Length: 53
Image (cartoon, rainbow, N blue to C red):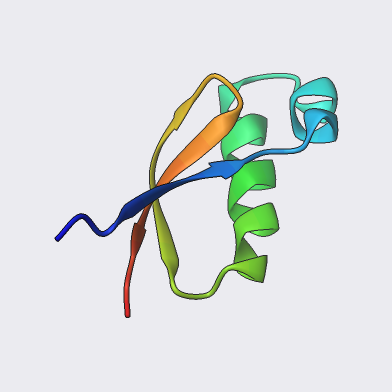
C-alpha cells in the first residue's frame, strides 16, 4: 500500500522564502496543520509526504 501523498503548498510560502532554509521552515510550519504527515521532500509546489496512520 502506498502511504505517500502530495500536499499543495500555498504560493505565499514561495513568495516569502528568501532561501532554502527559510522555505523549509515555512513548509514545516504550514504542515503542522497535517499532524499525521511527514514531509519527505519538496517538489515544485508540492510537499511529498508520508502518511503515518
